[in-house]
Amino acid sequence: MSGQTSLKYRSLFYTNTKIFKSTMINNDLKDLENEVWKYVETLRGSPEARLKSRETFYNKYGQEDKLEKYGFGDSEIAFLGWEERSVLRPPNSMPSGSAWWSEVNLWFIYLSELGSKAYEINFPLQQLPLAAQFWVTFIQNPNSTHWYRAHNSGIIDAYLKYSHLAKKESVPEMIFINMVLYRLLFAQSMVEGQFFFPSLSKILGDPRGIAVKFITHLDAYYPSHYPMTKEEIADVLGKTHNLDEMGVQFLDDVLIEPELTQLYHTASIWNKQPGLNALIINHKPAYPNGVHLPDTMKGFLIRVLVWIRKIISQK
Image (cartoon, rainbow, N blue to C red; front, side):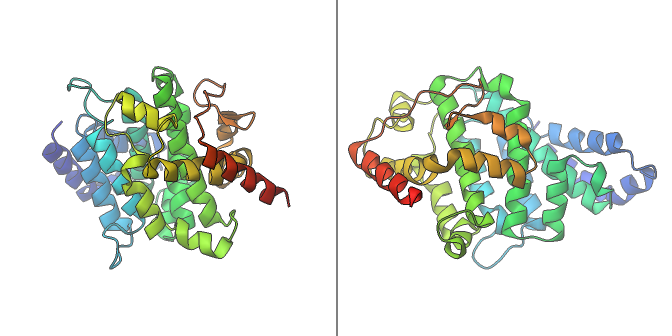
């Protein structure tokens, strides 16, 4: 479906809110889910329509400020821009996109739209899936903590739902998928106050802030092609040593890796997603197969910094 057709459907979707509300006198969750999914399905074949959909959402609920056009959604929009250019290409395109990335993204959008629609018609909160409940809470009281819980709960839910598709990805792609997840959880941990310097980390972790914007716009963090080229695979596996890649390794191996088990455990509580605990085994990311993937290579400087980090954390 074209982007224009999808946007027209979205306009009708929101225009009919009052009509739809009057038909839901019995608070039928299934009716609400069907209505929202009908809209979300119009986005399936168009990465552009998906992006426009999220831009529309954050224009309405992102708390736009003078610095960031989409407010709390700025980092998500930046990341979705990368997805649009690479992994979300339709299956019949050349080259084709990723079925896993496509379904995860679509389910995430669905949960967000379900929450916003429920909010607009005053649907009983407790009847909604947990991730959709988090979106209602964010819309009612927009702040960084509520945004991360809504966003990350939806992402985790989608990861768990589509693990069978992740198994079809190559090993480097699986490693990258795990990287994306634990970087999201780490960003959330800063806002939740689980970091070295809580006051500073809350500023750095703000999804509207400079630090998150820097990460979501840094080319070294995201492959430009799907499937990845040999050069991009080398980057993901830590086999290159350019300055940008060193920055990526510092984030992953020095700041995040020593805290992975605790990070997944606490994130499962913040986001009410106990299934997240199954994705970390023996202190290693284990999505989707339940066993950890090959370790990425660490240069000498990174190994030294990891050693220093562990010494500090033991004191």
